[in-house]
Length: 89
Image 1 (cartoon, helix red, strand yellow):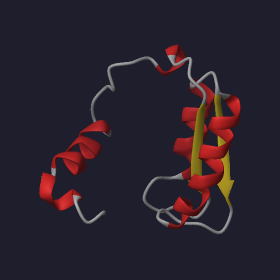
Image 2 (cartoon, one colour):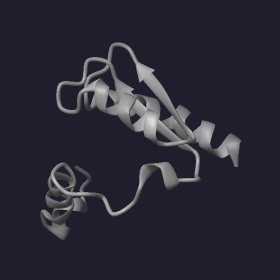
Image 3 (cartoon, rainbow, N blue to C red):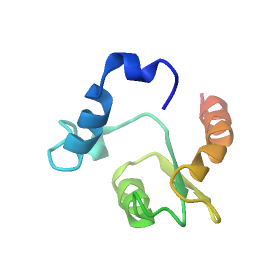
Image 4 (cartoon, rainbow, N blue to C red):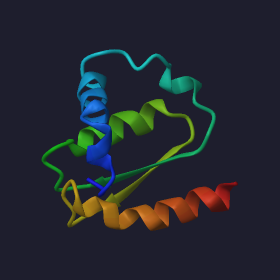
């Protein structure tokens, strides 16, 4: 968590938890923007199968797998994911 995040309370964490058990309010197939999913193959918090499911439902998605990464270690792949999105314009 960033230094400023605690000042806003647990709202973001609660939203994340609720997203697991309620509809998101959008059909993933309707997303027209490019999406890059960064997923560690050793993630034990969010299973890699979840990224595969999202990639199948999002029409313009690409999964960037990080073979040796778990949940937090996958953050190392974010810079290249942002570069990919910027290139797609």
